[in-house]
Length: 361
Image 1 (cartoon, helix red, strand yellow):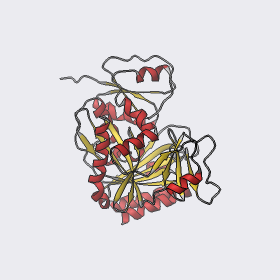
Image 2: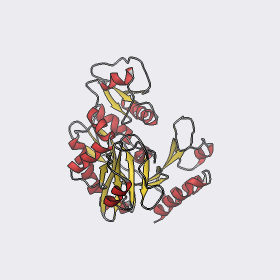
Image 3: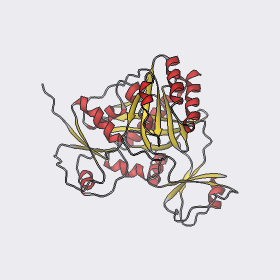
Image 4: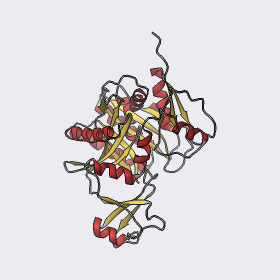
């Protein structure tokens, strides 16, 4: 019997939308990313499904039309998670551990925040801001310890967390409440930008159940459908939630090579009401973000390298692609990473040294 082709529209046409489209094609799903700046009418049908690759978007004819569609999956979740105040309130309501925080109100000062949260306090804009942008550190007895002008009521203050490691867990949930999860991924940031992700790591397996329980609690509370990512801090043997992302996530790109079902395919399956199944993890995987760097054909010659180039204009600190490695032979994986190091700038070297050290144990 010939399957009925489902049509799914994605609000946003960046690299995540492109990778969702790539994942949808083998499934027989007609997936159409939509530029958030498009000011035109779309040929939407009653049984089409709407999803998004981002938490926020401007008001245009196309985005307003998509947002008004009755089959816009997780519509209420996007606004809730995009605002760090309501996101934190959700975590508190569910009794899920996160950094102590508050909305920075008119009468708050750097001194009053230091009195409650200590010598280091991180200010984060309520919405937007990622890869280190939209943030400001208040450091006691330092010139930076002043709330920037105009930031009151627009940022939250978080207590600095002396975490041991940064990691993330990614899960998927369908309309029937069926959930599946990937192994915890270990993340390395530089200048606030995710640079390298490793997964799976056996030493993290003892935290897997806790991470899944936390993420399931959020997805069930929101009646969420699709892929959701949860960024975490490990503090000793405890996990604290840093932030949520109601979409496919940068730290899940390794699944394109390292799992039988990628995060992008999972999201398409869930939103298009296709059957889910447990993803089989293939090998040790490493994902390296390509940030503000020109395309280098030498990457294609590296053993095991799977290059994803986004076709975007190269600008400083802009994510323009990523490279995945997934190999059963750990010695070959390390060798390929060392060869990759020779093609990248000094900025990448600490992160790749870290990755190699983790793999070599």
